[in-house]
Length: 147
Length: 147
Image (tube, rainbow over all chains, first blue to last red):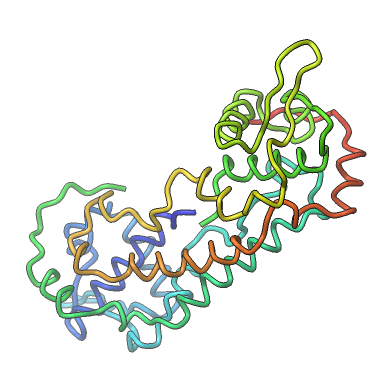
């Protein structure tokens, strides 16, 4: 039940951008800082931009920044947006012959809702603190990108 | 955050065995019924047997059955036993440079605890109902095994 790398990297990107505040940054800087491949980072940034959470400014002095107040980005919404599926189990793959009669999936969905309910009480702004800010300021650009 | 196939199949196996009650069954019957590969099913049954949840009886008329009262098998324990990891994100792969300062992981762990807390209120016995019993009784043995 680990979150996918896609969601993990989206969180890393959003935390980074919230720390940069109004300052523009680049996808290259994010990939260098967090060891994410550029292709993967671009997909993530595109998804976040379509949601309005990242703003992209074109041109020579362009770049990206957070597209809204970090208090508006609830953590449950990040998980819902980025995870491939919110199906707790796939009863069709391979087909489970007790599917339809079994109550496991509905109980897992209730458990998952409790998970999301906790995250719904928190926003991106809650993840930002002085210690994180210090780390962001001191990030060396020296990692091997990884997809 | 979907559960792994390993956990999914463990649930299917346990539900099946709880429906069979004291009647002995075989791994072959489980693999045929649920479309799981025999190798995968054997690994799962071994793990469940080591935990005492499945009892294996050797010999010509041997087979497997549930090793304890289904009320003793709490659903959170099945997830904890079968999932490869309960780490909600892996901050080391690739290394996240704000790890240690970031509070995301601890909040995800709190959310995950809420998930497990719901499952802890339920046992395998709660998953058994008349409709599931009817399905188990009518299972045709005609599926393509899948790993």
